[in-house]
Length: 75
Image 1 (spheres, rainbow, N blue to C red):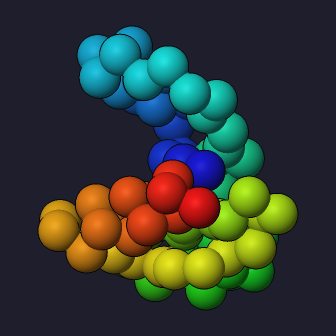
Image 2 (image 1 turned 180 degrees about the horizontal axis):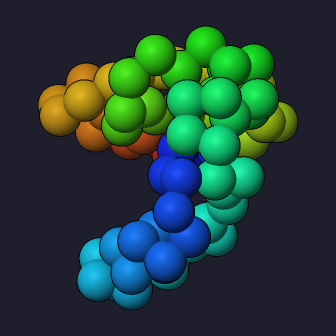
C-alpha cells in the first residue's frame, strides 16, 4: 500500500526500484483509509502475516525482521 499522492511519481518509483510485487494506492496520502484502518503512523510500515493471513508482527526492522521471517518459514 502506497501513501503517494501523485500517480506518475509513484509509478516511476515502482519502475526505478524494480518492485515486482503487487502495488496498490488510492493516492490519498495520509488520508488513505487502509493506512488508517491498520494504524500506520510512519513509513515504511511492515506487517508480517502467518499462513492464515493473521498479522503476527508489525514494524520489525533489520535482524528482528529477518528472524521473524525465518521463524515463520520454518513452520
